[in-house]
Length: 436
Image (tube, rainbow, N blue to C red):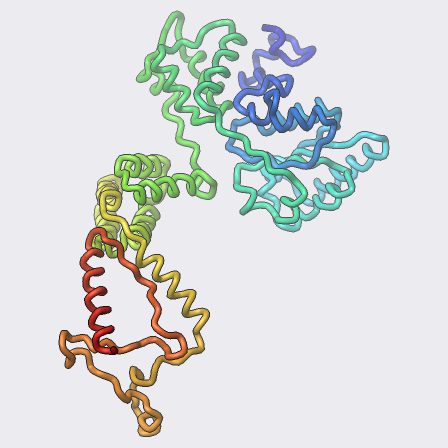
C-alpha cells in the first residue's frame, strides 16, 4: 500500500489527504480512461517517445485527468512545470511566469506552462501567450471544459493541438474503485446494485467516484453493507454534470432534436427528461420544440406548431412540475408526426434567390396604380382578379420577368402535404393550359 503514497511522505500524513489525491497516477501509463492519449499507442505516448512536444489544449469534462496528465507529461519530458489558473491570475501573474520561463530557458531548461480554465482569459490575455509559444519560451498546455472552437482565439488554436479527454466509462470508474479498495485495504461496503448506482452517480467524473467512495467508507458501520436506497441516503444525490453554457447543454438539445426528427418518441422522451432533471429552463425546451415543429414537421402536420404553442402556454399556466407533462406531450406528438422539411428547404432557397435578385422589380401587372402617372406606366395593367376566374385561379406569373418562374416548395407525399401536393399539381396543370 505504501507505493500509493507521495515520496518521503509518512503514511499517517498521506492518509489525511483526500483519496483522489492519494491515488493520482505516477506515470502516464497508470492513467485510466484516456487510453487514446496515454496508452501504448496514445498520442501523448508517441510524443514523449519522439522527444518533441508542442503546445496543446486539453478539452474535456471535469475529473478526467487533465491536470494530472499535464504534470506527468512535464516529468516524463524533463520539463519544468508551472501551473496557473485563469480564474485567479491576471496580466501581472502571466508576466512573472513568462520571466521565470525565460530565465530557465537561458539556463537550458524549457517550461511546460499548464493553464487551468484557459477559456476564462479574455482575448488580450490569450494573445499574450503567442510570443512565448512562438519563441519556445514555454510549451503551453491549456485545460478547458468549454469547446475551444468557441472560447479560444483562432491565433491561439492555430499554434496548439487540441486533445480531447473523454468522460470515464463504467469500466474505467470500476478500475478506479478497485484501486481505491487496494489503497484502503478493504472492500467498498456496497452490494452490486449500489456499486453500479455509485458509478452512475459519478457521471463520468473520476474524482467524483473516489470522493463518493470516501463518503461511503466514512458512513459505514462495522460490517454494514449498503444497498442502493441506503447509498442515496448517505451521499444524497449528486446533480448531473450539466452547465447550460457548456457542451452538455448543446449535446442534449441536439440529441433531443435528432430523436424527434428520427421519429423515436422513446429516445426523445429520455433526452427531454435528462434536460428537465439537469435543471434546464422548461421554456427554453418549449422554444426548441416550436423550432422542431416548423423545421422538421412543417405542413406535413399543420397541428404540430399549434400543439407546441399550446404546450408552452400550458407550462406558463401550470408551472413546474405539472406543466412539464404538456411539453412531454408536445415532444411525443412531434416525434410521432409525419416529417417534412419542405417549407424549411423552400424558405432557404427563396432567401438565397431574394439575395441574388433583390434589385428586380415585380411584374407591373401585379402592382397597384394609385396615381395616374403609375397607371400610365402600365402598373396594374392586365391583372386578373383570381376570384373572378374559373376555379378561382388565373394562372398568371408573379415572378419578376427577368427571373422567370422558380420552384422552391416541393411537398412530399407524406401527411397533410400529400393533399397540398395534389392542389399544386392541379394548379400547375391549369397554369399550363391557360398560358399555352
